[in-house]
Length: 325
Image (tube, rainbow, N blue to C red):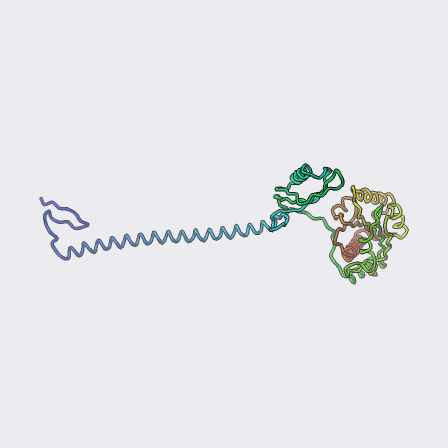
C-alpha cells in the first residue's frame, strides 16, 4: 500500500516527485490565496482598531470640551476675591489689637487672621497706636468660594423712571405733590447724603427731589430727635419720611431707627407713610427687618429714591386707597 506526505491539498507518493507543472502552479496559487486572506484579515483588524481609536479620541475631545464648559460655568457661579489673579482668594484686612507693638503683637495678628478663615496670613504693616495697641494691615487667602446661585438679595421693588414719568405718576395718583419729610435723626450730624437726595441740585448731575414737581420736600437737617420728626410728619401730613443714618458706632443707629418706628406706631402714623432709611451701612434687608418699607445704601441717586416713592405711593393708592383722610 502506497504511503505519502501531505502538503496543503496535494499528496506526493513516497519517494516520488511533483508530477506536473500544473500541480506546482496550483500549490503556489493556494499559498497566495492563503496569504491574501491573512492580509485581508489583518487589514480588517487594523481598520477596526483605528476606527475604535478614532471614536475614543472623539469621546475624549467631547469629554474635554464638557469639562471646560463645566469649569467655566463653575467659575461663573463660584467666586473668590480677586488679588493678583482671578479667584486666587487674596484679601487685605486691617484691624487694631490691644497689644503693644512687637513680635507678640504680630503673631497675635497672624492668629487673628487665621481665625477669620484666612490661609497663609502675612503682616504687611504694623504701627503702634499709643503704648498698648497696634494697628495692622495684613494679607491672607480665602479658600471657600461664594456660590452666587444660592444668594438671595433683598431690594426695593421698583423700576427706574425718568423725571417726567415720576411727576406724571404722582400727580395722576394723588392729584397733588407727594409730601416728603427728611432728617438725619438722633445725634447724627451728617447731612451730605440727605442733602444730595433732597436738595434741588442733587449730585453728579442727578437732580434731587426738590427739582421734581411730584414732591413737596421738607428737609429738617441734622440731629433731629425722633419725637420732633414724628410731630412734623403729622403736622405736614407727610406721605413719606426719609431718615439718614451715617453714625453707626456701637450700632447706635439700630436703636434709633427702631425707636422711630415705635413712635410712629404709637401715634397711628406708621401705616400712613412710606418709611425709608438710607446710609452707608444700610441695606434693604436690614431696613425691612427694622420695620421700614425700603433701605438705600451707598451709590443711591435721587432718581432711585424718587422712582421708588412714586411707584410705592401709586401701589398703595390702588391697593389701600388714600392714606390721609
